[in-house]
Amino acid sequence: MISAETVTQTWQRLGDLDEIQAQQMGGQMTLEQPYVQVYLLAMSEQPEFDENEGQIFFYVGTVVWQIMKQSPKQLREVTPAELERAEKANERFFETLSSDTEADFLSATKTMLEAHPEPEVLRYVVEAIMEEDEEYDPDDPPIRDENRGLAFLYLKVVLDAFISCME
Image 1 (cartoon, rainbow, N blue to C red):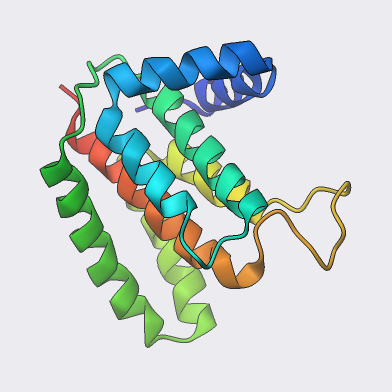
Image 2: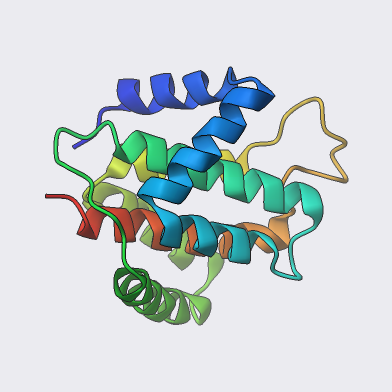
């Protein structure tokens, strides 16, 4: 299991990258996790997301990849089949929740965090998409409320696919 300290250090390290380092990391992701990169790009361009939301989504997905690389277990390349399996499992979960009340959803999310194989990484995803920075206009948050569930779903798919590829 990846520690909260590792999650925080990795997230901070990536936040300090300059543009050239970020481009190099993108090239590294193309080599190591091409299907995840394509998935993140495709999902970041969903019509529901504006350009800023798409960039935040892609960044959080990249941070998740870097965090998962810190695991003592070897991370192998995610295949399209593993992404599809994770997507189907998460879609069923969210279909179940969509008929519940908000309180049921919050309770289920809390239970999911407690039972997840990488709870600190999942907690980072939740915090990153829920974050509301003071620099942003309250009427224009980094990820709008109506898109947070979708961003969470797509990022959890990526995280679960990574977990399935740990050896």
